[in-house]
Length: 69
Image (cartoon, rainbow, N blue to C red):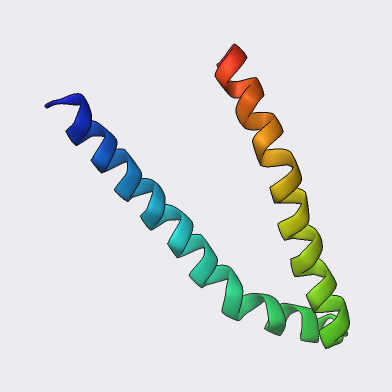
């Protein structure tokens, strides 16, 4: 199998895993938050902080992973 075929398969698998995670998290999170007494503002804050943390840390950890593997 060529390197290109491996890359395509790896990319497809990554997309599938990430999409499944997002589709599973999105409908469940509001239900869990409501059962714990959180309102829409608090739920929005949870999602925002999670997204902003990922945006800030993923490039840093990507560089560290590239350097020290």
